[in-house]
Image (cartoon, rainbow, N blue to C red; front, side, top):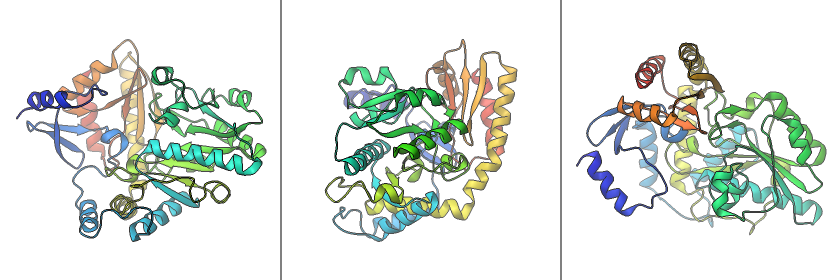
Length: 395
């Protein structure tokens, strides 16, 4: 069967909540994907920043196969070896204290919100605490995560949402200060805004928020779901700012394709927030998911993925900067590491994405007018050169 035939079948049975590209991807190897008709695509989207190790990695697959042959699920009523070892790796990489594994990034956000509100409740015995979030942010589509997502388009059909959320402007410290009240229990933001258009936090902005939090016993929640797990050249983007959150959320590349997320707490927050009975999940932290997390950390360390990102990212930035100088409709490049965006003017981004797909290149969009580049972290300079060639053909 060809792409069109599979798509016709899918549209008969799937709920239409995605406007998918007209291609049926079947398999992959390295940084290349292949559809059911045998056409190959250079992938600079990585399943939306998920497949950091690319596709068909034999050592990763062997780790999963080994766990499948032992046990897939036991619930959180019991301990497992992968659960313990994966948590140890995440604690070591983050320098934080306690981990709760979830099934997705949105669930990690939900847990972070609950932890922050429970922390404030345990401190003063009151309810009605508020959270400050950022305009143009994206934290997920569940009701709690959507409530702290600063985009009216996403929120409007589902109101009323969770109450007690105020919005400030990203990279505008004064606007954050204006929203702080005696009821504020947490400030949540992405270290690098992803869906909003690839905007890294300014160092002064992030440090200023941390100071506010320390002075008023407010928890800082940093969303590293997209920008974490090596994408910016450190385990987590906040580590390059010298600003440690009280709660961090991660997912996507944490499992490199196996659905898994986590929220991680520092000792202060862990010791005074969620207690037995406050939060739970049937599948979160199951042995297969944790075996994937453990394999990802081990392979990152063995292969020097973080240093590879630091070596490769400047070349990607250079080549994208050259495009900005060459084409008038490209306004600017911005980003960190292998999370980059090109702002497009006077040209429909969707048209460029469709052209790229025809040219065997997968890139993504962000916001309304940004081309987003979040490739597997194993890309080389040769891959970047080939991407640029195919992208220019798509222009």
